[in-house]
Length: 226
Image 1 (cartoon, helix red, strand yellow):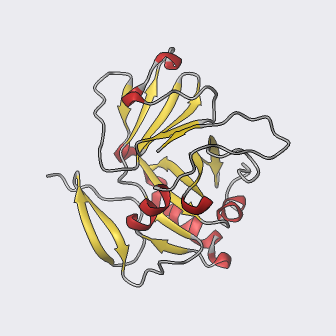
Image 2: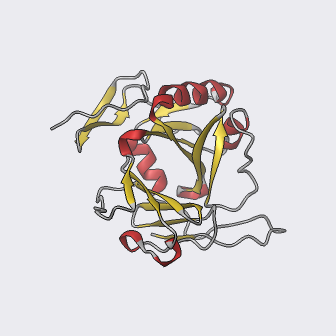
């Protein structure tokens, strides 16, 4: 089997590893602090697709409901769908069962994109140093194409287990190590720690069932089913 290597190097020795589709996934790292209030995890191995076409509102990829508006997401059966614009959406598989898309409208971009998650109440402070886009106070879940240190990325905000917020970043593979370094540097004053896939999985498993907005907002709810 072809060995696939993440573009994100956490610089820690994996304590436990699982292999899937050629990826060696670090479930936990030696010396990892399991209760750190802010952590970053590598999601580069997560299967990812873009779906493009003029009639996205009529499509239900893998049975997922298509969000009604740009910037909204659907999270169902560990599949995340973010509507980027009326003609394009992104799909990520955050669980174990990977769907198969054979239609030409789908493009597998797993190896083309690095991805990381920053989880904890201070995730907004971290990204305020790296991007002009402000997620704090906006409805959640929420997605946006926004620059991170001048590199355009897909950013997804989700509230996970116990309502703890997190932001998933997906960007061009070649910037993977740069993203990790920038996030760790920006989060240093908030005691950010590195975490394996297992901790991320526990957080995403409790993603809130409904979106929420500021009391003054009239923003639509995202479609989220667990």
